[in-house]
Amino acid sequence: MPAPLPTGEPMRAMRLEKTGSLAECEQPLRLVDLPIPEPREGEILLRVTACGVCHTELDEIEGRLPCKLPVVPGHEVVGRVETLGPGVNRFAAGDRAGVGWIHHSCGGAQENLSPEFTATGCDVDGGYAEYMTVPAAYAVPIPAALGDVESAPLMCAGAIGYRALSLTGLHDGAPLGLMGFGGSGHLVLQLCKHQYPNSPVYVFTRGEEVQAFATELGADWSGGISSSPPQPLAAIIDTTPVWKPVVQSLEKLAPGGRLVINAIRKEAGDQSELMQLSYHKHLWMEREIKSVANLTHHDIAAFLPLAAEIPIHPTTQTYPLEQANRALCDLRNGNVRGAKVLEI
Image (cartoon, rainbow, N blue to C red):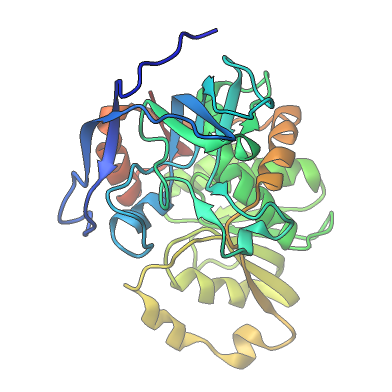
């Protein structure tokens, strides 16, 4: 069992202290020493070993998603239980556990929609640090078959993709489109191929290299976001941060098709694209749009064993903690092949 930590012992963390454009400031996070947090009643202290880098962090940094300041970002967290707060008997010291976007909420089936929803690395300090605390009820055991680095993107990109796929209402054999192919898209493709083996999956993304990557992972077709798929689609999951793919997706849906938008925020830069919407062309014939709002801890708990069983293999690029700014800039500039993970 790990020895008790001295109260106030310092830890390294990357902290966001003010918001602004990443294009104008490529070092938005500052490496600081902070006291190791002490778990309160019902909480555990995690020694973080890996934390995924998500596009939502860009929304926080650039001010599209309000967050407490200063804050330690990071919500795709994997670590080992260091100490238990009073009243915790669900974990033991040394156990592996993960934390996703949901830090805590009301605990009900719709906790993702509850005003009590509190986000990791946004409303409370997250995993861009050597240690963090979380309520034990919202920490999820990591299956033994999954390594720390490959588990990190599963905590949000994978689990929110799992929720998005369920919201499509897809049935086996119906064609699915993936608009964007980053951290979440490359995991949803693998999940879809397992759950709906007869459904063709068509990927829409920028760049021939990423399109080739999608084909390598099993996509039945890949092309640019304005390209026409081989057939109209029953559903599309949009994971992009911009508006043009929304219009393009609606155009590609079959009558009765559903667009599921899997994004916390959309950027305003190309919002004028919405002026291209035609009721007859894009919305008529009972086409519909549904958003994904956060996720529940039930989603993560259900998804991780499934990911280990399939198994889902995230493609990752790793960075040390102190290079978190570089990882964020790479993500912002579109240098994405799979998911980015900080090793801590």
